[in-house]
Length: 185
Image (cartoon, rainbow, N blue to C red; front, side, top):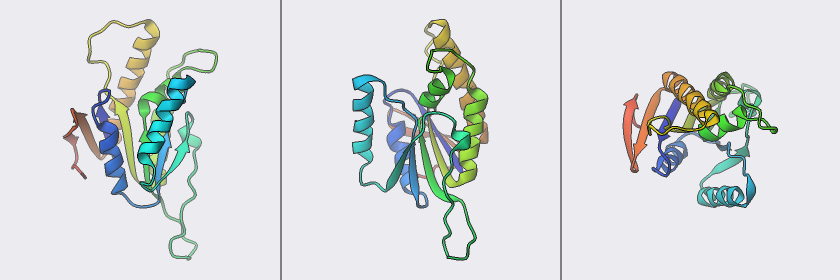
């Protein structure tokens, strides 16, 4: 099952997604896609780590190339039969998109296919995938060309992920609004 949680900045989407993931099957993985740049980025990552400490997540930091990520499947009953892992919380597609879009030298490419393929791969690895993403493109502000390209790519990615998801929830001012499927939390 895949759940997409979308919302604006600081709207409560991450807290909602985390709570949904905590109700999912074990083991639980927190897949962190934010590449920490500078002191401010490092502080933000540390704050997020502290917020989820003791909540039963194993953190995996992965900034690009989700399609090659492996989670060893558990052998739950000793039979040698492997099954999908428990729960993966991907935080967040906005960061992943930026990481995939701009290389180390600042060259830009369209990351949509890579990101969507990577999320589909994650969905195949686990029983519950909770994906957090940012709602972009509705503010009507004019941006630089590279920012417009990012917003366009993330918009395409969000549409593809929403189509693939079993449940889509938009979090507005801390309130989950069901867009597709059923609310698990």
